[in-house]
Each structure stands twice: as structure tokens, then as C-alpha cells.
Amino acid sequence: MLVDTHAHLSDPQLALDIDSVVERARQAGVATIVNVGDNIERSSLAIAQAEKYSGMWAAVAIHPHEAESLSDESLEQLRAMAQHPKVVAIGEIGLDYFYDAPSHEIQKAAFRRQIELARELGLPIIVHDREAHADTLSILKEAASEGVTGVLHCFSGSYELAMQFIDLGFYISIAGTVTFKNARRPIEVAGRIPCERLLIETDCPYLAPVPFRGKRNEPAYVRCTAQKIAELRGMTLEQLAQVTSENASRLFGFKNPHLYFQKNG
Image (tube, rainbow, N blue to C red; front, side, top):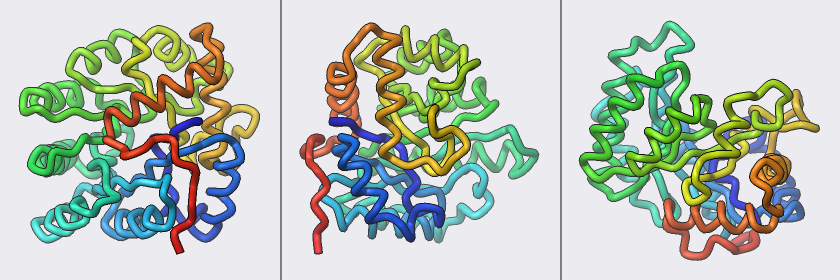
């Protein structure tokens, strides 16, 4: 059974269809989903969605694209939400330098404040790093020194950079980009990093893997990503699923990573 460690089921593209999305995931062998928030509203919805399914968990945070919205008030809202029993991480948080705004300094301040919240609550972090590798690494060195761990989601850097994050105690999560024809870096990283630090994800509704590329992504398609990584590593799909599920359980502290979805009410 598979774990999708990063899905955005509170996104409008998926939220209205969630029961069907979850059923297709179950049929594809997905046992657990981490439903990741990216602002206050969608973090709250992610928790409400997770409450409906025994195999779904939530993460809460403000995404770097919305870093300007992080205030003392919103941080307290996140603190309250993060203490819900279905919340297993603070995320996604991080840095995104692909766009011009918010400013790098605003993003870094929001990143550090949410890392500190994770440290206070003893939760791992889910990290977004887009074209900000040097600053992300620098800040995560600070976080690791304070005992914070987590995962670099949808990892886009080099193998050498991945190993630097792993040396800090972080996990590396591979998305459907590994199935793309010219995805040299994701293919190298997925094939070479230590198995005990490897996770898989969809990042749905974005980045659907081949053969669904260009369509709306959903958790069921994490099977395609898992199959590709298994081939790269000379493993069976079952072996890859077991290893990555155990890794997800270790990082996020799932009570049972092998629950099928059972709708609660």
C-alpha cells in the first residue's frame, strides 16, 4: 500500500469531488494521504476533510506565495489548528524565488516563524523550495540545529544538494516529474538517494505523472510515480511501497500507515 505524502485536496479542483478522488485512490492501493494546507482557509478545510477518513492526515501552514499574510493573528490560528489530532506537520512552508513577490526577506521571515512553531509543537515541516536552494539550505541548517526535521517536497535540486538536506536529517520527496522524459535531476535523485530517506507524492492537483501529464492530478496517480522509482532502483513496486510507507510513518508519526480509507460519518 502507498502513501501520498503531499496532496492538496482542499484545492477547489479536488474539494468538490473528494469522495470520488478518495475512492479512486483506495482502488489504486493508496492507504494514506497527507492533505497539505497552504493558507488559513485551506488548512482549516484540510483538517475537516481529514476528519472524514481514517487514512487521511493534514498539514497546516501559509505558503511562501502568501507569506505577506502571516501575522501574529494568523500564526496563532495555525498554532491552534496544529494541535488538532489529525495534524501531522507544519506545511507547506519555504521559499519560492521563481516569482518577484513576496520579497525574499518577507518569505524568509515567514519561513522562520513557522519553523519555530513546528519546533514548539514538536512537528515536522513540509518544505517548498523553488529556485531558492542556497537560502533554503541555510535556514534548514538553523532548523536542524534546533531539532526540527521534515521533508523537501517535490524536490527539484541536484543529487548533491539532496544529500546535504539528508545529512541534516531531512527526507526527500519525489513527485510525478520523475516520469517526465527529460527529468534528469529527479531521475538521478530518485535512483540514488538512500532508500530510508525517500518519500513519494503527487502534489495534486498539479504535476500529473505520465501517462496523465497535462490532466488534473490526484492521489491515485502516485502509483505511477512509485512504479517509475521502483524501476530506477531495481525494486518491485511492493518493495518500494513498503519502504516509502515506513519512511512516511517514521516522519509523520502515523498511528497506522496501512489503513484503508474508512469514511467516518
